[in-house]
Length: 358
Image (tube, rainbow, N blue to C red; front, side):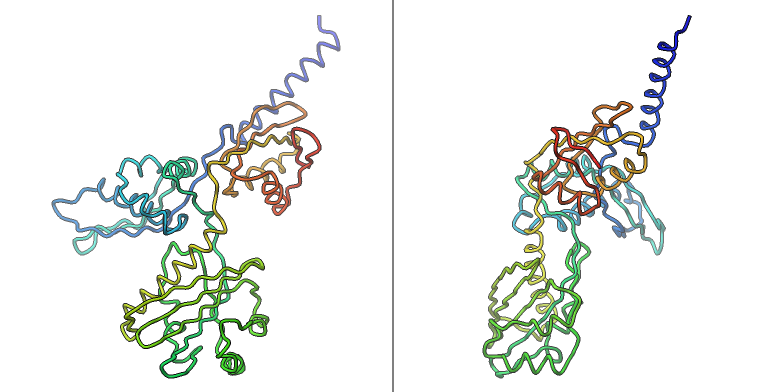
């Protein structure tokens, strides 16, 4: 015979079971592997008696990995991964899809989207002693000044080979988007009047005209066939400066000019990546809990965690009618974690050992 006490105990057990079952459907248990997405890898191969579709797919994997590596690791680290074998790359592939597959003029043509398992990829870079960068795209206002010392002239727009060709040299894996200043007579006169002190000149009056606080100033000095490129990189009120010299330069040679612009952009990309390096050797465990009855908050929390590159992994450790508990593995400090979550409007009470999502 059931007493009221037994009845309520059974009901409570059923409720907890239903909570558990419901969350098994809406949350990840060991969490979906986060991925690095590389899209639109173009493949064009001869379609003849030697055609092998598997070889083509493997080539797409290799090409996609090279693009991923170029976007997240610095130039100095690239030699560490030059001799990879195919099996190492295939181990990192989570999934892939083929689009626009067709045979045309005795050629096989297709576009591949390749998804790399993030955890495996970060572990791979760590095994090669490489700290990758966060894959963050960023707009920078860009001022390019060309000083021809042979002619004692300064060029900002017209007859400035760097200004005229800067955005012709693009790579899919570049993270920086350069917003070149508009042609303006007043700005030119201002720059020209400060030509003799151009390295120390502050461009604040020009920069204030644009809705971009972060900016890059490249000053190119030409002396006969020698070139010096001074780059000033302003980000978040911090200044970094790089200087590069080149000999035997022929700016009338379009290929050599493109190569110089590519090298300059690569140096700037490395500067940007150095601001966003992920210390994959640091794996900080963070325990947080949330009310299991607030389904929308849980879904939002997981959606946001899946977007945060510094979160190496997360999973549910336990669930009850009162609390849903997560363990988060974070590649950074507690302060970094809290700031990132606050920026995403996820606020956390840290008064207790297990932090509580508000």
